[in-house]
Image (cartoon, rainbow, N blue to C red; front, side, top):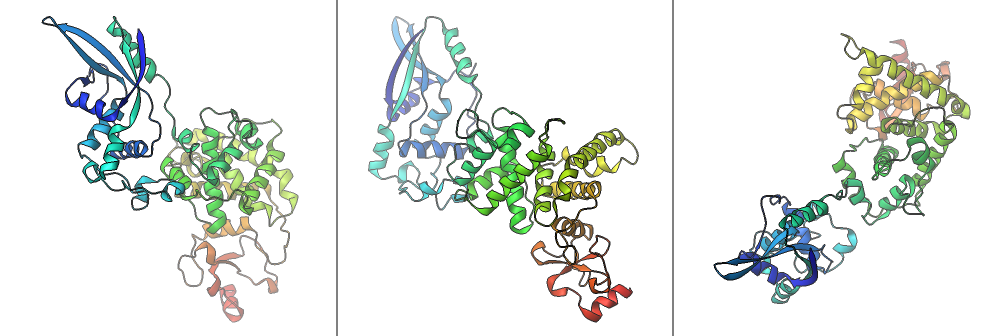
Length: 443
């Protein structure tokens, strides 16, 4: 096999293709598979003078009726060549980074740069841009071989490398959230991103960015709940959207410090090596639970956490055997089953966490509030909120978390305890006072 590295302008490649001198062998090549969005991004890259990956062509010389014929057969680069050809033929218009923001999802720094080809097809480009596109030199390797099967073997070897997965692509995004995920989730091949002990010790090593993806998903839930108690999907598309919406993420924010503190606490309490590595859903609920405990409760919960968590996971394992029973056990129905179906959906995560929190609260009881006289802690507030189905006891309408108050059914002034049984969900503006409160006590 002989290889000849060279360059070739786009116009020459397209002319060869138009004259059927540059073809694809359908016996071993797949058809056109790129989406229109992928094609648009390739042309945008060409016009920005970004480097385009090598194109491999099989240079074939044959004798036909005493005449020599030369052809080029694509070994690698079919999708790129098709995209260039279709744009030249007017098949699509290019993205405008600002006007097509929802679909294009270009980083902010590109939105600040001129884009005179935005929403243009080839015919709409200025003459200068047309020339720039057609004269762009692409790197090409021409392969000559006396054994055609070598070209197929080269194709197989070129395709055998694993394509970038979703998280590996996210790692290349600019912005603060990428930096955050790399710092906490870790990327061992880069010395300055060893990762937090929570992900390296409790989750364990994972290949191809799985720990970073889990870190991103947990962070989404953590930050959104701290902002307004909202739950969010953590599907692949949702994670991609979050990266894009948080290009200006502040890695020095108080919430990031809080995230780090929560991880430190869990590593300290569960990092004794006495249990298996955490699964993703277990990591999610532990982090959200500890975040709820840190501010409102004395440290009495800390020595109880590991034992309570072991008891919870024992119960999950024990009741898994009831999944085919007419009435499965609650640990299967309310937790384990929800790790298997729609497990990345906001409502599933919320229901699962509510059950996890309720059981862990019971396993660690009694918890001591820092201010036991009147205040309901974060954990009790969550349990009461979801127990009462988010409905105000006064007006019977749904209460947003930002408007939540917990009312002592029997007033604290009359000896009413700050307990789950004595707490009810109310809007702040509906919070019963005086005679109204007494009426509810009487009922």
